[in-house]
Amino acid sequence: MWKPLSEWMAGFTRPPKDTRLGIERRTVLAAGIAGLGGGLLFRIQPLASKRTFNPALIRPPGALAESDFLSKCIRCGECMKVCPNNAIHPAGLDGGIEGVWTPVMRMSVGYCEYECNLCSQVCPTHAIRELTVGEKQKVHIGLAYFDKNRCLSWAYSRSCIVCEEHCPTPKKAIWLKRRKCSTPAARK
Image (tube, rainbow, N blue to C red):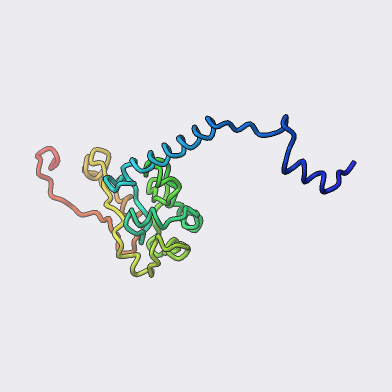
């Protein structure tokens, strides 16, 4: 039933010919060439040579410059876990192969809380610099824009303050300001 240890070790170190792994020279050579080719493909990717940067990627507040960020971020996901409004998500291939699973802000899903700096506190490699709440509030994350054709106040001269009401900053980054109408149709 049980084999002695010496017999088992002999079978382990020198297995019978019919159970040996059949590695041929051509298989090893093909694997080596494939590995070398894969490494070269990483080097020709635009972000690897610092030739481009995808402006659609919005990194969390306090993130280092893109090349430093990519080299320091270990893709642990801690910043994504602590985001209270679910604004930080893993990047797909939109950041290139090097940027897969790095944190990006998806403002269409959630917004960056004005009084929060948790993502900078939990980053173990400091790819996201630790910021105080005051420092974080001064960080320019992005520039909002609106479609003038869909905005009720702009396109139809109607009273609407939804943007102002939903703005999370206490001093309101968005506010409604009356404008003078210049077209005769708008004055009626």
